[in-house]
Length: 563
Image (cartoon, rainbow, N blue to C red):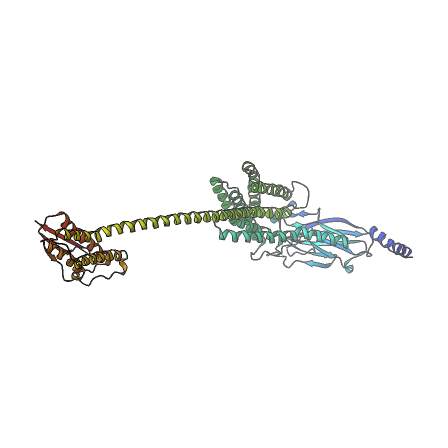
């Protein structure tokens, strides 16, 4: 039952489908004529047969104003089928009539002109505007022949087919360029921020400048008015100036990326760029077409030459990022050469490849720069890791060295302490023992217990003084020189008296500059050693001991002996 129902529906729809297939739209004739100064077509015009797409300069090279295009067409189905109209472009602005009914009109048909040169449009022709038999479409185009004014291809047919064609044209002529603009601005902004942080990365800065001027150049494709400029001629000048700067920054980026040092070529590039900018800015409108032609050809040739030279450089260096960049530039070169020849009608076709390949080229350049960033980051990470390992190794070696040095210092300190103790024992208790031995030798009779005890107490005091001298920080400095020398004076005076040696002590009443404990200990040892040598080795009968202060805070003890 379901099968029979499906067959019945198929049979019902088949006549309509056959009718739709049989209905065809035929374009009978296309003519063009210069409009009257007021833009009307009321008076008889000089109509000439043309083919679309059509540019004015083939018929009227110096015309500025408006041109009317007349397209006669017919449909085999009459009014039974809705007819769709797709218009690829109007250079620069225009309006469309179906017979005598206005379908569409640009916002401005006088300077500053609206810009519909890359704006595909689609309409469904109103049934009220159609007639039986032959119908006429009227297209008024406003512009200047010097700026390639004219009418693009016009398509008539079933509405679904025209809608699909319009969507395809919109993707190729609008959406793809909008995507290109977004990608260029995003990548340019990203690498500009990287360059601001790391000014030494010149290739990132030139890439950002290149992306900026490329964005300004392709923005011309998307603009629908010349604002903020006042005319289409000014917009054409500014657009080609952006192209010149883009090519210059592109060359600088490629050279910096490839680490090429070409100072003479760089100077020549900027001189040529400056000359082109001056020409585009100051050429009178009378010669504008020639200036625009030069402003396209010269940068294009520089661009092609740079795209050709870099693959040879990449082949010599054999670096991965250079080879990847060379592949992207060759792709860009082929697309640019195709569009360059297509623009001058040197090859047939209507599809531009630059919109497709420029996105791929920009992304490939960004990917190569990203690879370089990733490689630099990996290099930095490896360096940081190696640095951390070296620091740990150096710290371990330093720790070992410090431990060894500390142990050597401890051993040296112990040795110095022992030597100092030996000197102190020699100068202190040793001197006391020598005095006591001399006293015993000079005694005429055996010493009494009290005398022996007194001698031992003196030796004990000398030993205590020697021990205390090892920690001189805890020793209190005597208030006067007399207090300092009193114990020593007492011991040696009694000894000198027994040996029949006269002694005179010359000691000041007060310190002119208070010495520290270490200085007092040193003076004591020095004086003990000197007086002991007097007793042991000299035959002096008179001794003078004088305490004198030198310049500053230094003191000295002087002993003079007289026979």
